[in-house]
Length: 503
Picture 1 (spheres, rainbow, N blue to C red):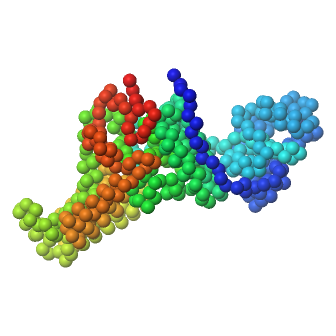
Picture 2: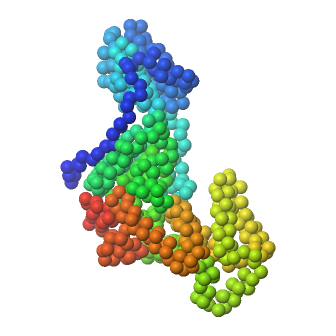
Picture 3: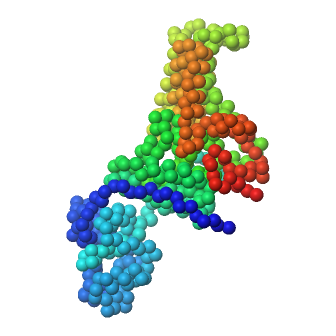
């Protein structure tokens, strides 16, 4: 049974009107002067010659076939326009079904009309009444829905977000077929006028989270919203922190799962990625395909990811600290092996590890920026050849390469590469602490990182939850995946009005 809906805040548009004055064809031609794709066509309403109307659109954004068949042809139909001599009558006839389009907007504000034209609308302009009728006839020549490239899907959906906002919202609607899935639209960017959609489940999301997000979107005053970084740095709680505070996903099924948990989603027109908030560190360690696995398998995989997190962050710094300052902690046979490998090398252990980490980052960056076939070859062959040549030339020791390689592979095992990038920076800080003060420096830097982690909030939710809530069983909730019938409640940290997810 539906309850009384909550009045959620909607982001307001605070920008002043850029285009003023009454609507007319001459005014539009002045605004779009030197725009080679701006098209106009003068039509006689019903071909009777008593009333003229101007059709305006931007070529390439509008489907020519749909515009001709569903708008221009009905407007010039004699039977539909018989006896119409006044513009007010023509506008009334069109609004009451004179054309075949389902969506029509009456515009008397030039700013709104210009925005419609820039977003794939065709406008019928009535100069005498200073009124325009706007029809959405966007061209369908967009990238089709394909498979996700960054987030591999084993048991989930094989579709991914595209650069078209309405296609992305439809992909989410197909998974959550409920009127309680709310979609609040706004425009961001004084000059780009980029569409942003806020998606949430009514009755599940915390109203405080929505109010905070609406206020921050309200304060976002930029020329253009063309990248995720522009949006992220303006809405997160701590923009100076390198830790990711918005979860990025290109999979609609994962996006829908987070909405059903009581989180808020953001979709931006032109960007094939969905953003989710609020987030915690535990959210970045989860994989969508875990929901399709047995709870014991999912638990084992989750434990493996947290082990990879520890190896990626601590292994190089721990090795340098022990090998440089605390050799008594190393077993005798292993110590003799390390001494034998290091005795002919010109560099210290710290410089070896720093150099190998830098070389690995360079190879990784080259593999990402080059075309796919060349990039894969450079990543694999480059790492093998450089590593083997460095060992044979007695520049670095084999154990240093093993330590760096294990740490790098552990980074790739993490579900979120945004988190992995932040860990690489934290790994460097830990390594510098280990170089200067051994395990004491490592412990000091690690304590500072944990303090920073505990001080972060994401829209009212502590970033380190559930470890920071002081409740019983927090370690169990963090590391263990319960059986599906036993997982009856949503995350308590999200403060959802309805905590129960199943009976």
